[in-house]
Image (cartoon, rainbow, N blue to C red; front, side, top):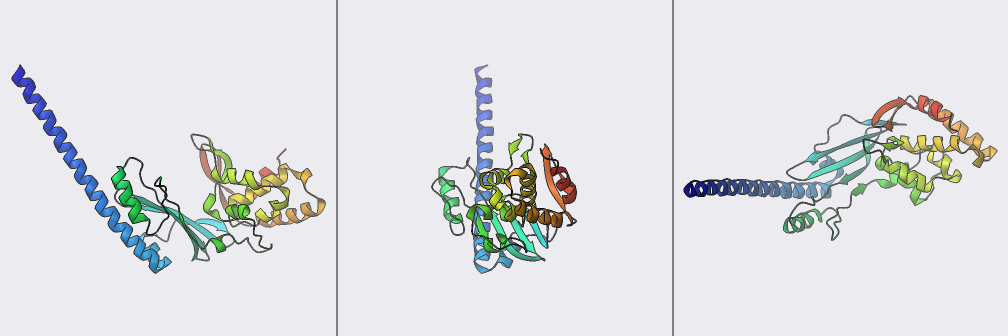
Length: 267
């Protein structure tokens, strides 16, 4: 009996040792693949936007139409244990801005976190808590309002002019019913003085939130403001555009004109 138990213990230890060895080899492989790709990506980033997108293997498909000649491409590239997510803003098929982000996994050892921080720091800003700040290119162009209104220099407004904050229109969304990031930003800055300006956003969700705010707060606007805003809303209704809307758990698409008509009933 004792001999049998001893054999079982030896077998278990052997299996655990093999499993640990395999896990270590996989980790080593991931580190080699990740660090090599980070070096390639850094080199491409320093060369040009074209080289960067080529390295990320960005495909010319599945772009979201934002209206007025703008499109947004959202995707990413996974390597070993790291992934890079990107949002690319196009104007008439030309790349004018992008956001590139990544992160260091929390479950990695301190030694590996330091290694990834060292490699990523050639491109990104990485703080002492290993949080990686996104890289932005072309934000000046992305923060330009659409034709028809003079550009302002309000920093908080520009965070919603571009589409990087999120292009889904709604309030609480998903299975967790959490408040959308762009909705949080909008609620922090919206007022009757900047409502019309936000109607000229590149971001279609911001345009719809501004429409909603207007219809739900009519008494806050002067007659001159109402006249100008109503004209702009009519212009938006004429754009044949499907926007992404979230009601409850489901994200769907709806014609802008239909959404605006529904928002007009706000009380």
